[in-house]
Amino acid sequence: MGTFADHIAAQDDEVRSPDGNITARVTGGEIKGLAFKPGTYEQYSDAALELQLAGLSRLVWVARARARRDALRAAVDGPYDPEPMRPDSAQSRQALEEQQNLVVDVEMTHVTVRVEGGTSWRVKVKAGTVREVPEELFLREVATAATTAIGHWRARMHMVRQEAYGPSFIYKGMVPR
Image 1 (cartoon, rainbow, N blue to C red):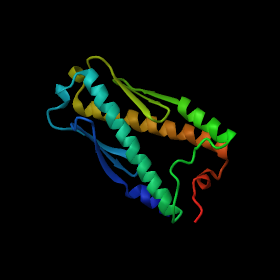
Image 2: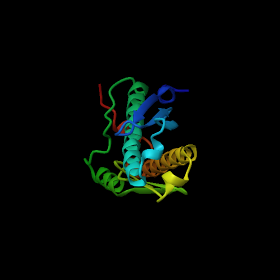
Image 3: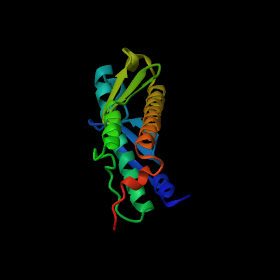
Image 4: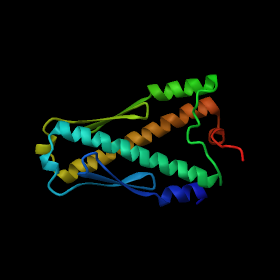
């Protein structure tokens, strides 16, 4: 593997929901573990769980973005500007507008994940889920929905960036030495 892939593969971050009761392990850019503190799943209302999962999803997204930025810096062996989509041209403005308007929805049996603009995460838990769905099944479904949403978002943004910047998109963010 190259330097970028090595750095991404080495990522091992743990993030917690705003209330600290739900933990996600992000390894190699993917959610590899999701867990509740013992006894807490049953204590949530569906609405309270939605808020905690949305907050956790944002933190997973940030952990992935930081790992990617650090891997890019290592790959180019120098400074890398993590904000390559500054609206400094018509192409950049169009790409930024498309990013801000991009919506990804992933609907599962008991949970729906929505990503808007890459910064807004919403999680909808089907009414009665906490009472009716076992914790392990729910955790698998949430992890699948979040991972799928991230994958769809990245694929669509890759197309937006390719269209705006061409195949050398990564070079746009490099800072000359």
